[in-house]
Image (tube, rainbow, N blue to C red):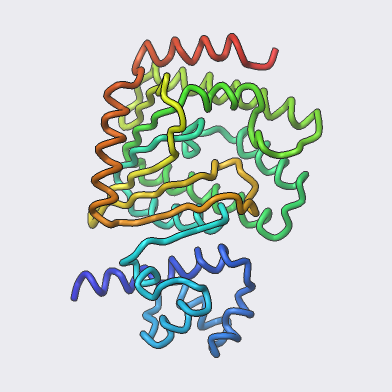
Length: 289
């Protein structure tokens, strides 16, 4: 019964993430469900929802009722829905183990966010472009408040591309903003070098070299469970992008399989002085001059 209650408490969180994923307005979803918009917002804040309403929500959002109850696998084809769900999970996370591409977003600088916001505005991503920065800012605020331990592996090839193209590498930016994006990329990698050398408590980095096609994934451990997220979208991807599918699951077989792979990669990756030296070499070769 306790497990069921815990799952029901997550429906509101998932509802908001799925709503952002669908791109539908709150009043549109409420009308289709036959409830008021105020009731919909109450559901999103965690008010218990009747099971028949859960069924209607699942049909409307085109997901399995089990997924909405947090038992199955959650799929997201747009970054905005995925990162909203990640924000919710991170608020109850004590440990993060991740292969990031190419920085650990939660410890990036305000300059990174500034360039990201400018890029979104320049590419005119509409309503999602207005919500996305606030979602990402909330993730940083939660990290600052909780300070979960975080282990991050950076694929070397991803760092190279980041230095060559800068923040929002896939976006078509003006020459001026592209130069700014590359300068910020160099600053972020320099900051990671500083963090590696400072060895702050609860924050570790390594560099994964000579490994191709490393998938971005996160393992987030809380008091109740561990959650796996596999994500093709970088934090600096357009919030309206729909060129991949992210998934989130707590299924033990998926979590355990990915944990073994991540731990093996961590064991073989460059750490400490070796990692800092490798990043310095990349900065010298690829950073904007």
